[in-house]
Image (tube, rainbow, N blue to C red; front, side, top):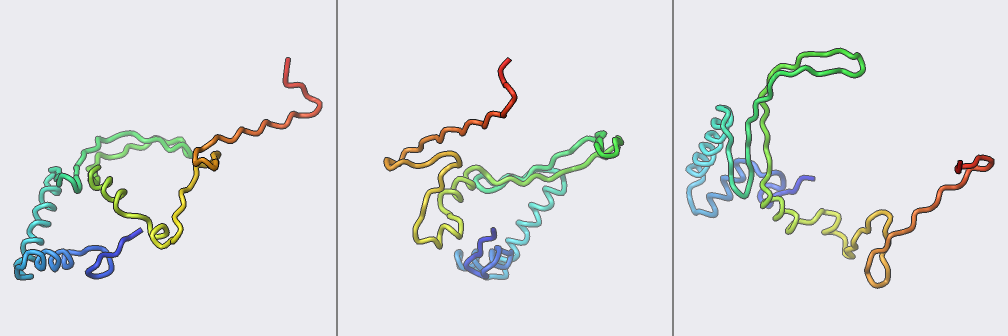
Length: 149
């Protein structure tokens, strides 16, 4: 699900960020664009050098080296050497995730005039609002065969 921003109605771009920042600070847009572009260039350069980049409360970029290894294809039963690799891991901070869950609702919930709480499968709500567990149905016994010895 993509949330539209208020400036362009799509994902936030560098141009959108420039407009928002220059309007907020009251600075010239060309100067603001230069600062935003240089900031992003510095972040990219640090990642390309193998350094991690951390923005507390927002996102972490981590570069991880994966050693070479032998992998197994179960279909052909062949073993293949997999070369060493470098992976980039991007993870949102727990603070940001918590804020998103707290302040944003899915689109189908926002448009629904009667909010309802989904119940977990296998449980039903009683009139007091407490959940009770349904009893599991017993398996039918097989005719002609004894299950006891």
